[in-house]
Image 1 (tube, rainbow, N blue to C red):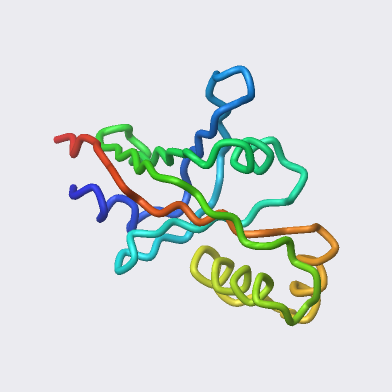
Image 2: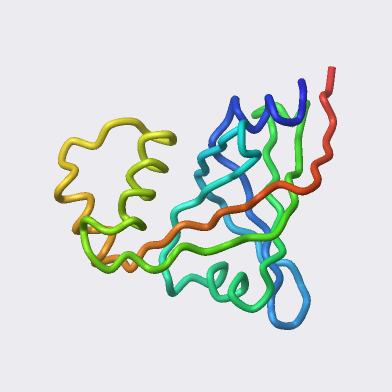
Length: 138
């Protein structure tokens, strides 16, 4: 299985950021992968440890594996963060809608979703892949 194919075939993984003390901080995440841009996007809240870690040090890795652990890939790169959602119609909320659609599909009430993104103080992590490695398994 090609590295990028594994990213494209799945939408759940483990995001690794760097804590203040230098140890890794791992978070299970749902992600949207854009193969044309080699870009991974994740919806997060502003108060999460991973968000604070990435503001301090933008380096991150995403680990994705098959359910049987027969194949995996790790995508590495630097992250940019969108602004925190401030209004239901702002660019951040528009991007959060795109991420949701890619990961889950259509929402039953987009107006409610947009309001929740502002209330939850959500933003988008954008991981531009600069290096990846993995193993295709059997």
